[in-house]
Amino acid sequence: MWLLFAILSSIFAALTSILAKVGIDGVNSNLATAIRTVVVLIMAWAMVFLTNTQSGIAEISKKSWTFLILSGVATGASWLCYYKALQIGDASKVVPIDKLSVVITLILAFTFLHEQFTMKSFIGSVLITAGTLFMVL
Image (cartoon, rainbow, N blue to C red):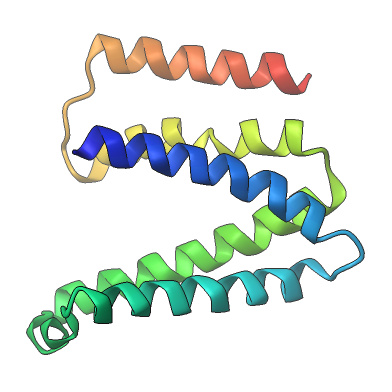
């Protein structure tokens, strides 16, 4: 199932980029990010209540709260930068650079989570980086 959700995520992420580029025309990028965030907030809480998982809030540890909050801050910073970049740049150039997050994630996962970094991961990272540079230069 993870593969299906990952594929759907990539489809929705692609739609996000195109819809955002059209939607921010003439709109301040920070305001556009705030509007998007409200929609995401409503959708996320709707899923919590639809799946009846709201009672799990009390069971979240302090460590999890800390890292979820930090993750939210990182997401907010990413979205603010992404929308600003989309507003002033071409989607066909902004999106590939944004997707360098795959390579950065692999490096961070290896460094901090001690996940395996194989030759396949290295070659893939080099190819993603080279492909990104090829697309934007």
